Amino acid sequence: MAKKLIIIGIFLLAFFLRIWNISKYPVSISMDEAAFGYNAYSILKTGRDEFGEFLPLAFRSAGDYKPPVDVYLMVPFVWAFGLNEFSIRLPIALLGSLTVISFIYLLISFRLSRKASYLGGIWLAISPWHIYYSRGGVGSISSLFFLITGVLFFTLWVKRKEFIYPIISAIFLSLSVWAYHAERLFIPLLTVFLIFLFKPKKKVILFIIVTLIFAIPFIKLAFFTPAISQRASVTSILSERSLVNALHNGNYQNLKERIFDNDIYLVYRHWLGKYLNYYDLRFWFWKGLQLTPTGYPDLGLLMVIDLPLIILGIYSLIKSKNTKLKYLSLFWFFAGPFPASLTMNEQHPLRALVWLPFFGIIITSGFEYLLAKFKLKKVLIGYLVLALFNFIYFFDIYINQFPRFYSEYWQYGYKQVAIYACNNKDKYDEIVISDTFGSDGPLNSGLPYLYMLTFCDWDRQSYLVNGKHQDKIRFRRAKIEDFERNNIKTLIIGSPWDFVGELKNKGIIIDKIQFKNGKDAFWFVES
Image 1 (spheres, rainbow, N blue to C red):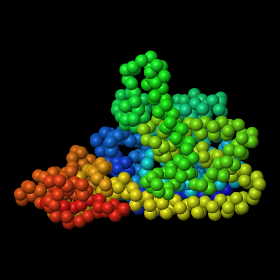
Image 2 (image 1 turned 30 degrees about the vertical axis):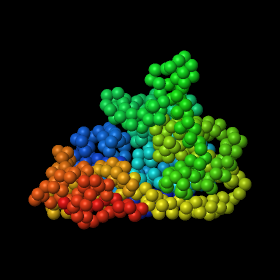
Image 3 (image 1 turned 90 degrees about the vertical axis):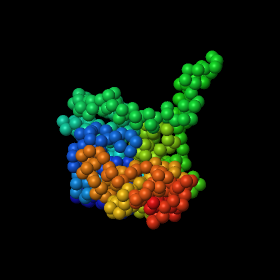
Image 4 (image 1 turned 135 degrees about the vertical axis):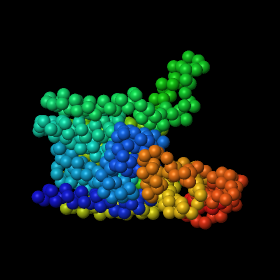
């Protein structure tokens, strides 16, 4: 009973940190969150996505194709709580909290002590890296839950050899692939490694059959639809301008260039630089989460207090006779950042989230080392006291600094725009909402129609049936013609940068919305 109470307590801690004020922080739902949420609503009402596809396996929205798992996970929550920030973010926060429980049992299954495993669970429960993404409604959190749970049942299958475990393991690992892009490369590598490491002799065929059942639709998406290829073309390092400009494309000047500076070498060098950047300790402990601009204090993937635990954990693993845990840790250490390194962004903490279990295993091994020398009470109190200072620092950056610096990159203001336009649409003959914005210029593009559909009952049924917006609402930048039509009352909502040049001083500004940094985000202008 005491063991269950400890597990429940750790879960409640994790759930509180992920659910507290979830509708307010992050400062606004992103375009991806709005796309996930509205498509969940559309599936709930019609069985079709926003483009009329019946129960799709990839959701085309917000510029690319979304994995399907989170959309379908949100459906019951949208049914229960309506379409809003809470219902969109709650299932991700819940799975993020459940990940802590699966992780504890995974650590125990690898013969780490229960006490150390509980401390490892507490570490994950208060991890800023995991909390941050558990609150943002993104697919990597659900994918990580399925991944860890799938590996847990794989180890149980090997130990207990019960019929149901390979089926459950294959289902969870397959769901991880369907939940986020990075796992599409990582899970096959991990699965092959686990089979090689554990050499399960029974029910392997059953495991493979269940995996293939989930893989067949994925193969169809990859070869017969643009769902996979479009995403790859948008994010691949092969599309990165600096690399594209450096490639010869077969046009070599001489033999030396063909041998020593050929395109294969250039691609490899470019990738290797990105891959090695993930091992930069500044990324781990100082600037990994990228919650503030360059030059400002920030947060790494890990807390500073984790550094001595990592050192102790590495030492403990080297001395340990637990060879399977050693090999798994080595695999995860090298393979964790591999999928993220193949994309064009430098040091992407979201795509690298699949790496998190490696750090958890090492840190738990560090706890194991400390528990061999000190009592649990001393280790727990000492860790929590030191972690508290780290967490207060994280709390300030996340609650105060992050919204101030980056509210516009979370499309802050579009909710207010949507609600205002909906509540006042009968006052105007036409409403024009700009799809570009930014505090320093029209640098960002948004999808304001998704916010209209999410935050007000704006002709949703009509849009679900025929995919058309209301005739009087337009989504584009303002034109001079909007101010020169007689007998037409128009409301134009755009950034200050929409009203420059020939549009300067046109119309009457009746209201404004500001970003969290105090700069004007949107003007409401009557023509």
